[in-house]
Length: 386
Image (tube, rainbow, N blue to C red; front, side):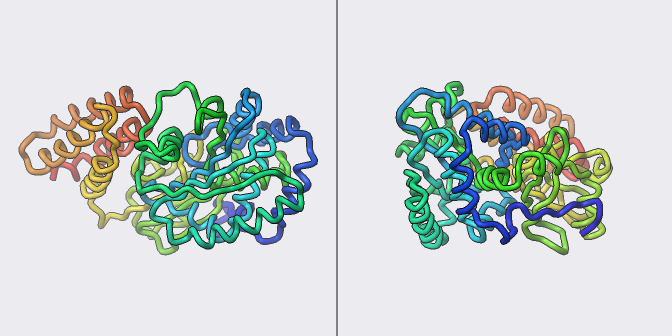
């Protein structure tokens, strides 16, 4: 591993006992631990980047005698597979983070919302849950974890659509506010955290906020687990320090001919080679839920964009017009330009449409289509046209 790319082992290290960490942390003052989370600078690792400590604080302060914790394991972003590996290799750390959250906010019930395509891992995950339930009894911790299966809907990665799905309704995003921390599952205060985020809360309990914050930058504290795929000789899951330059990332993971990197999956940004040195991977640059797809000069960026738009057309829940109609029109639009039915000036109209979608769509699906669309169209115009 290059000296410019710092690999860390908070998530996957085998030298810590999550049950012991949980037992010790349960003895700490709840407000003090929330403050430690806030001081650590931990932000949600699912992509949105909301401060985790604040989310837990709001849920703890919310009125109500029944609260819930939900682990968002609906990993549907194209190019992302790190949560699957975390659940396979260190499920106890995820479950420990859920239990810790339940203890802090006053919740006695937690759920893992598992991606429908991950049904094959449900049996092993349930065994890990059963073992942790025994540990909870030893700690006299009243917390129970259940698995709820998704049905393959990408939009249910959005927390309120996920909650709707769990309640037996069509998986469609809710209007916000109110946010789940005050009115969530069954109308009760609910914390929804990504798989990776929950592990880091337990790791912060273990190593402390200062050590966690010693990694990364002021705006992007700590490390991050990345799913690296595409034209790379070493694909896989890596835990790296945040704040690295994309040029250093490509030097480590590229094949020597990388012309673009899609940061953040289909809903993220496509960064061309000329911008590698100016791009920071982090909240002060380009944030990512974990997906890093590398493309070399043999790849058609038109085909890449067409693939993304196909995906968005299929996965739009159809609830709001900007997303439902906009995704279809963007796909038809680039096909028309490619086939010479429309001239290159039509791309400007499509960019305006994507910007309208970003402003007017109800949830992150429609709002994020412009990220990949605009960055590919603007940086690889000739590949769209010819």
